Structure formats: structure tokens, C-alpha cells
Length: 493
Length: 89
Image (cartoon, rainbow over all chains, first blue to last red; front, side, top):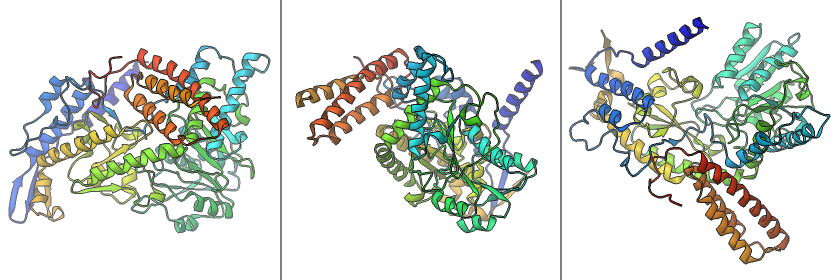
């Protein structure tokens, strides 16, 4: 117990350390000019560190005032200028991080409350009415979950979420066929849980090929074909990327896999209910679903496991043999029913939501890409890009500093799992982005409950803060003066 | 059989309820959704279809009644886009 506490404290300490890294002072030599930029760089860091503590404590105006350094001469703006008069407006940030999680739809909550109040039977109790009624509802939910991807309800296995499902697929299938097959193919831009499961399989003696992606984040089908071996058992390619929203060519991948008799798994946590998926048309054998990405409750997800031709896998959790023996354990009817209702709504409102999200996404993109030296990460082709995920790089600004300056908007520079570390995104690295670009990227998530008013606010706020931070940035100043940053020799001391 | 007066009354009742969401995003969504759904089916003439939509509207009204009450029971700070003095019911 005590050791655990000490460990936790130590972890915390390291985290704080990494946040307040001392910036080495640099002397920049550009042609004949020599000047020191340390003080400016330090003030940005100083600002970022301070505002992080401030936002952690509370969004009180006193602490916010103290972090605002004097704007550069000639600038009429401050970091706070996009925050409106606090006496007239609320203080809770706008939520623009729907790739991390979505708010629970009130209609989903309404469904769940039935179970949390009166319908409390164990769905596996087959001897009485309490069990029968919840079992009936669980099966109804299974139908709704299956219908979104045009699967058979019997092919849906409820799990605790997409991470468990990804583990189940990537570890389960190769383990079942380990006597004859030894090779797994996945991509470099997968979610951490897929990459980590694949690494575990490497420890168990499997070979893993990590396919590279092009500058838009798409894999090449020729690379895939070339990577296939006689002993390849599984191909795992995510449907929609969580950081840049790029949609992989699922149908083509499925076709290649079926021709080579390889199982095709796709992590559809970000795609389920948001893009058209037909497991039969796309020859998908296993598919991961998460409930809290579709306005459902957290703590539940599902795995689609094809029955014909049958996909066999070693279960990770064994026991009472529930869920076709692939995932034992009592189901949670409130979660399952909430998940089912969320899936039903996703299907019913797919076109309506899509139109709304696309409209807001275009508006946001237009408003942000008009800022000089910005770049959209992902694909420009609407066929291979999910509009609800907009990832933009703001050159000469550090993403984390911008996030700290934007405490009135809930955003992320990438996956929630890695947002605690300041390490740049590996997904953007895989696209060929350098450290600076990866550091300056921010992901905007638009969902069913995002409003136009919020998008307008965000466009205005980002425009102002980017201008402010750039005015403080020595790099930006040099770019404005026409100095090519690549020609600079950075000397650290 | 639902008459046009009943349909109009349902529309008004639904909107009235939607305004009662304390949560900004749910309130705005409910308003938008109700408005767009009625607009979408404006030209509907089949009595059977009208009846079935009317009945689902009645169910939605009951659901809104429950969910707006819950939204008013668990309140949070207003968002930065929300004017503070606007929502006195």
C-alpha cells in the first residue's frame, strides 16, 4: 500500500518536472546577425507552466490575470481577450474533444435509468421473470448494435470497451492459430492498445509488420499485398484514425485479406455509426466498437466476430461461458441497454448528424486555415476523411502552449491516452511530420451536440491566441523578417 | 387520428420542453432536432404515417419531461458561450 503511494508520488513528481523543463538558452546565428532568444522562449514556457497550474486549480480570474504577460508593443490583444466579460457569460469550457469521449445522450440515460431503478434482474438468470425481462432487453440492444454494421446479432460479443476488444482480437486470433501461423500485419498509426497488443504478440514469438502510411495517413494497398506471407494470420487496420480522422480503404483491404484467407480486424471505435460500414460487403472478420464514442455510457463496448466463415479465437477472459464463451462475466444490463439505445440512435440519425457535423467542420476548417502558416493534417478527399475530426498544425507555436492559453475550450493535441506526456504524436510522425509540426498540432472534435455558436467562438478565440503567441515567438519574428529557419545553426550551451 | 391542430400543439409543447434543458448543448440539440423533424415531414399526407410520427412525438414529449427535470436537478456552470441572465423560467 505504502509503496504504491510512494510510486504514485514519484510518478507525479516526474510529470511535474517534465512540464517545467528548463529551456536551454540558445544563441541564434543567422548570417551575420547574432542574438539571444532565451528570454523570449523562457517567457513562453513560463506562461505555459503557470497557466497549467492555474487551470488545474480553478479558472479564477485572479490567477488568470497574473499569467497574462504584457503583450508585445503595438498589440491590442491579450491572452484573455477572447474570454468575454465574465459577469455576463459562464466559465465552463466548450467541449471540443469528442474523440476522447462524448456526452451521454439524454435519450440513452432515459433508457438506462429503467435498469438502474427497477429492472435489476441478472440477464443470465433463466428461472424467473426478473432475469427474462432484462435478457430480452439485452438481446434487443444486441440487435441494435449489430444493425449499424449490418451484422447478425449473434455475431456481437459485449466487452468492456474497444481496448478490451482490440486485445481480444489481436491476441486471441493469433494465439488460437499459433501452431501454423506466425505473422500479424498492422499499421504505424494504430491506437496504442493495438500497438501494445501487437508488441505483446512479438514477445510471444510472432512477427509483426507495421505498415507505413503516406502523408495523408493512408496505407498503400501494394505495401499490404507485399507484406502478406504464407503464415500471416491477421491484418488489423483501424477504420477512422483517432488523431487525424483519416478513413482507411476498408473494402479494398477486406478484399485482399479474403483472397489470401487472412482474418481482417478493424478498430472502428471512432468510425462506428459515423461512417458507412457493412461487415459483409467489406469482408470484415472482427471489428471493435466503443459505446462512449457514440454518446453511450462508458465501460462497455463490443466485438463483432464473424460466424461464417468462422473466426476462432482464444478468449482472454474465461469463466461462466457467457457471450459464446468468448467473454465470460455477467453482462451489465444498464450499460448494454444504454449502448444499444446509443447505437439505435446513431443508425437512425446518421444522415442528420453527418450533415450537421460536416457543415460545422467546413466552417471551422475555413476559419482556422485562413490563419497564415497553418496546415490541415489528414486527407483532403472527403471519401477518406471523417469530418468530425479536424487536426490542424499551427506553425511556430507549440500546441501545448496554445492549449494552456485556451482554457475556455476543451481540446487535445492528440489521443487522451498520451495527453499527459509532452511527447509529440507518433501518428503525426508517421505521416512524415517533424517534431515542430507534431508539437504544434491540435485536434478539434465536432459531434452531435456541438453548436454553431461554439464553433464561431472557437474560430475567434484561436485566431486571437495564435496571433498573440506568434507575436511573442522569436521564431515567428524571424520568419516575418524573411529568415529561413533551416539555415540557422542552433548552438546550445 | 391526429389533426393538424394536434400536430401543431405537439410541436409547441415539445419546443417548450426543449427550452427547459439546463444543459446548453442538450437544449440546443433538442430545439434543432424538433424544428428539423417537423420541417422534414411538413408535406406528409398519409394518415397512417402521420399517426405513427405523432405517437412517437408523444413518447418524446414524456421523455423530454423526464430528462429536462433531471437536467435541472444536476446543474453545472454555464458555458463560456452562454449569457448568464437568459434562462429564467
